[in-house]
Every structure is written in C-alpha cells, then in structure tokens.
Image (cartoon, rainbow, N blue to C red; front, side, top):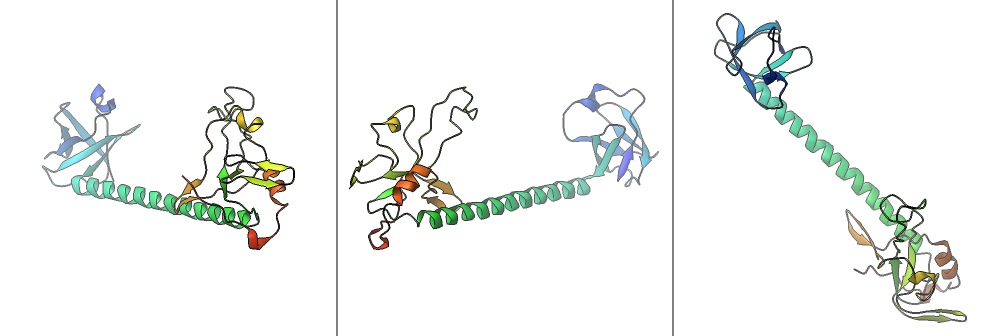
Length: 219
C-alpha cells in the first residue's frame, strides 16, 4: 500500500466527490498532482518508477495511492465479491422460496375440498390506524381458501369467488381490494399456504381423499 501525506493547506479538490484523482511520480520522490499543483510526500510504501501515474483516494488522515494495475485489480476483485454476494443472496432466497413452496404444498394437501379452489387473501385498507403495517395493509391479513366453483354442503353455501370462511355478501365484501391468488418465488407461482383458521376448520368437514380436488394456481 502506498500512503501519501496531505499538502499543508489542502484545497477543496481533495474533499469533493470526483473520482479518478491522479498524480505522477517525480524524480525527487514525490507525487505531483496537476489539478492542485501539489507535490505529495511519501509516508508509507514504495513508489513506482518516475513518470508512473498513481490513482489517489483521499482518506481521513492521509491519501491512499495505487498504480493503474493495482486499481484495476482492486475494482475487479470488488466486482467479483459483489457478484459472489449477489449469487449467495439469490441462492438463499431460492432455498427459502423452495421451503415455503414445499410447506404450502404439503399443508394444502391436507385439505380435501370436493370443488375447484385456490388461495387468496384480501388486502384490508387500514390506512394509518393502529392495525396498519405502515403501507395501508392490515397486519392481520391471512391466506384464505378462494372457491373457483359453487359449493353446497348442508348449511354451508358458498359461490364461486367466495372465501370458504365467509361469503362475499358478508364481511368478505367490505374494505378490501381484489384478492391475490398465488405466491411467486424463484421456481414460479404456486398456491399459497392457507393460514385462515376458519377456512381450515370449514375444510375439515370433507375427509374423502378420493373426492378431493387439488388446488389450482390461477393468475
């Protein structure tokens, strides 16, 4: 590492954000900076041959310098590390997406509804109330069974487009926007895990696996 000393009265040039500050090694063992007419003294390290260009980086107490080769190598290494971090983050996200997708598939497979269905959640417009997540969506939002066909089973009457836990004519039809119907991940869209306790409770009335309809991933 090459370390240079600030000039006695450094100009604002050294504290501005411009990149690619450069200087040239002189015959007297200093680094001449044309932009400020400064001759910087060596504090640490070994200067390259006379006439070599150094790339200068102002630091808190001194100025770091490096050759073009070292500068290029450092930037390439930084780029490599950045790409490695991005790939590691992508792999971590992919692993989490796979875990969530498999968990959703396994738990949804325990529901034996005899009609076509998918997942859906209603985004409650909560504004800036105490129940808001800060983005206008109620923090109590859960994932429901969204019916794709009418269903009639005793006193349970639901139509296509209803949630299993409540009909659209009830509280299901208030203060919410069009439901999202799936989750998206590294491996594509999939039916979200049903988390509504009332939907799960209602679905337990059907226990015939032979008549069960698998959930559909719909747009």
